[in-house]
Image (cartoon, rainbow, N blue to C red; front, side):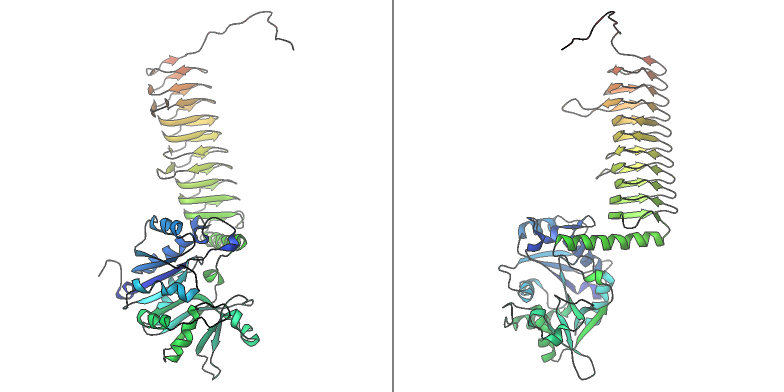
Length: 472
């Protein structure tokens, strides 16, 4: 048996319907590739399937199949096998699942999901699989005050309340349309039974399509018990069909994240203006101002303060650091590390490979890339530090830069401890400024400077008396 998997989870296969065109999105991009919380809708569903412990996922593609399949194939971190099948043409939900039959083993439980329903929780699906038990048909349902557009759950009138059918809205009577319990589009069924029901589907309905929901009446006819797991959380079954629905779902999900963080003690100035588009870890007494966006993997240590309008991606920020407003931090693959008690911003930019030591100050309009700054170093104004190793207590003046690129290759600048670099200096790499050295303001330095020295490299000032500016 594979490590980390139980006998129950090994026998689960997931079918994800992702063939729809998504006409109402009004986009060239396939609907399931539109992003929610920084990830494509389909990736949310795949991650849930992987977290469920499913042994395989079968994606049923159609419109934009090549793009969808390429995006899913490139997805990393999935602990399951991916299969792709195509639904051409699209003849209904039952027809979609029929395409998956050739790659579905007979011995498992099949869970049917939709690629545009991104926020179903793995625990909910585990409960659904448990209800199925390998021998029953289990449906995920929800009671809605406004059930328009959904298939209705029809129960027996004999007092037992057994599920006997799902009726699509276009085929429903007035009485059936008044039913509030709806089918979410998610079910769990024994694979062998499901295959038999799929073979018997017909398209004798208002839309002339093969409805997956018709397997309910086939199961009832076969004497197979049909059970409904009714949940109360509409967010878990909410689908996306338009930009408006996508935005509404984004806000609902982000508000839920904000509330969870606040319950853990994080102080968020306005939970309606807070976005996590990846993973965020927060220590104790973290404070986050309005309109901050966190992408990739971000870790905030104890007592970190993040000012308004910051974007922070793939970064670790140590305890007591202050990120002032309008700061942009993006570590991409290399990451960014901000040391304990450091102060960054406002209007600063930290790029991949930036590592700030304890108590470092990076001020307004300062950019740092692939550079390490030792404890207490400061670059407070209008500066660029790229491909540099900066020692402790260095003061890097306003308007100064490391010229690290010669047009073909990057070169490194080494600035040792206690160096003072004046304003408007250019340090042309590769070079080393020795410990305790000073670089005079306005200098262009292209050769290494010894420790304790003063380096000045600028033209002699010329004063022309009586000179007059040209007049038009």
